[in-house]
Length: 174
Image 1 (tube, one colour):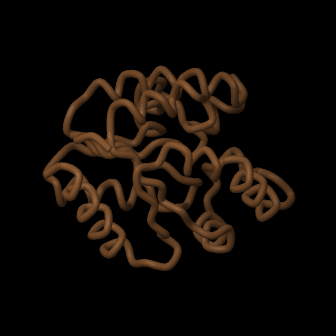
Image 2 (image 1 turned 180 degrees about the horizontal axis):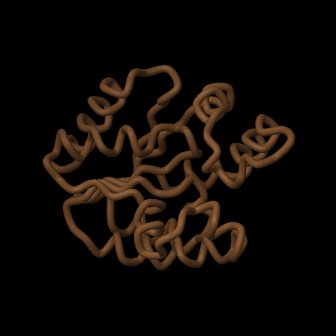
């Protein structure tokens, strides 16, 4: 593992990427970015609207362009969208430009955390639990394939998660 100025957070929706990312950035005194928020700011519309008009593929194209731009920055914490790792190019961009942390979380905890969230296009389904299980099965091997470090956000408090990440990050950046 090589030294890195950037920390990239990957994981399923509801795993805590934005929450942990903000706390990490604060602890390191660096800027925090959320790729989904950056896409919304650039387009002027929310993610569900992009999905509605452009479909998932159109959204993934926008996401890839945004990740290409964000990885050029130095000294940032970036929370990626849950599906950012679906494209090999995104995985390579992240791997080659930063320290990747997989925020792992159980299907049950994710379901609990996202139950009332109406801004998740992939959960607009009759059976959200089944959908999360499918996403987990599809994406976990990809998260694991590119992660430098993995931490379970379903069993630890966010402060503990941040401490574990900082410990590992600082160990490789000595």
